[in-house]
Length: 328
Image (cartoon, rainbow, N blue to C red; front, side, top):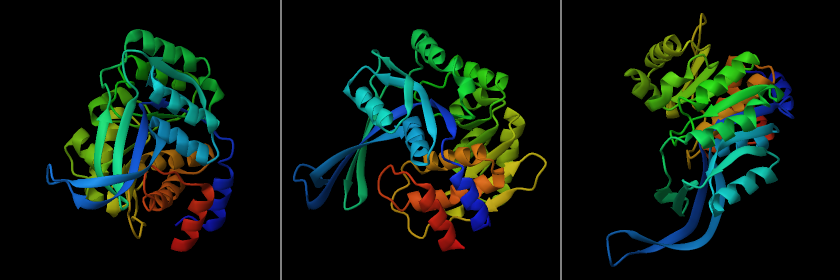
């Protein structure tokens, strides 16, 4: 277990860390209400909507988390030329994120997930999106907006939700710019795009994605180690972190013993966006000088905090430190 004093040093060093995120940006729309009856038209609940909120989702939620942790964050991605895209851009800009790499595409809508929540439980989710790869012109504009400034950042993140931004054109150019500038890359790939992530520094994914990518079950510690080693061999990365839900997390580094941490959340209300929180805290800790083991432990405590909140939530350094004290 990381010591409180060391954790405080790392968390205090979060302030001002410079992080650039490439990935699939989304807008999460939340409709909150209550249920008191069943529809006479079909056996479904009728939700009386009481309020509506919006939060950043996908790669935009990673930026949202990074800003909440104290980062100076930039975003490279695609939005629609629509009201939802403008809303998302404005939300990130208000947080202080650099949004010049957020390119509007008139041929696609901003990916929007609408969730209906009743009595703090999700009833249904409706997605509006277009998952085709971004076209060449949009991809060029996005890369032009960020490649010249890659050296302004300490660490890069790739947040892949398989919505069309992470392609064989965009990602290799992004990773090449990172290698040339000697900047580490923390990546959350989808299995469909796994082979594009060769030479990323750290790969973070959940056990379902690890199984899909390797055919190896990661539910046990041994299985997680085997899947991680298979991914490391395939991608020539430095380390693999597999999140395993209520079984915790498993970190595997080359030439080191695997490090397994137990799940800490006493009560889980909502896992929406928890993976974004994990990758954000992991990234910030590495940028602040933490080891991978220390970064994993901090990310695990952050996950324990965020799953106890309803909706796509973020976590602050103070909340992580408080969670560390509680579990200590």
